[in-house]
Image (cartoon, rainbow, N blue to C red; front, side, top):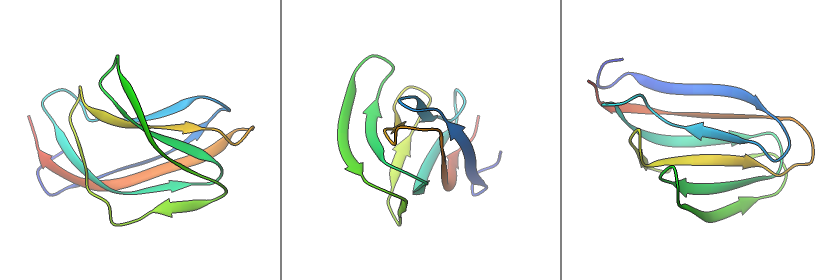
Length: 97
């Protein structure tokens, strides 16, 4: 991926599992939108320490945010909906290896 390219994905996430929004080593992203089909919890995560900073009920989108992510500092989204749900994201590559 080159700087300015879109970073995006959609995954089916099991109950109480996580979608790690995580670029490869040496790559950095700014994620603008997180889409969710059911209840979620957002966490700021470094691979060891986790800060739960928001929750949402039902379907929705975190729109027009600026989550700055590296391979070691990232956001992960926990599916708290009680069943498998789709979770997605999009943003921009700000640094490439």
